Length: 120
Image (cartoon, rainbow, N blue to C red):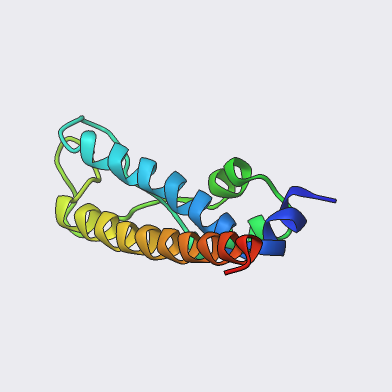
C-alpha cells in the first residue's frame, strides 16, 4: 500500500494538504527573509497542482518541487529581486489560515477516533 493510500484512509486528503501547506510556508518565509537579497527570485508552490500530484502517490517533497513557480513582480526591482512584501505577506497569511484550518480538522478527527476507542 502506498503512502498516499495510507493517508487517504483515516485523514483523507487533509494529511497530504497539511504536509504541502508546511512546505509552502517554508518557501514563503524564505521569500520574506530574502526581500533585500539582490537577484533573489521569489517562488511559490501551486498548491492545487501539488496536491493533485501528491494524491497520485508522489512524495510531498517531490510534489512541492515539481509545482514551484517563480513570481512575476508587479514592479520589478532594479537589483533583480522579485520579492514584493505585500504579495508575500498575503500569500503567507492565506496559507497560515489554510494550515490552521486543516490542522483543526485533523485534530477533531483524531479526537473523534480517541473517543470512539474509549467508548464515549
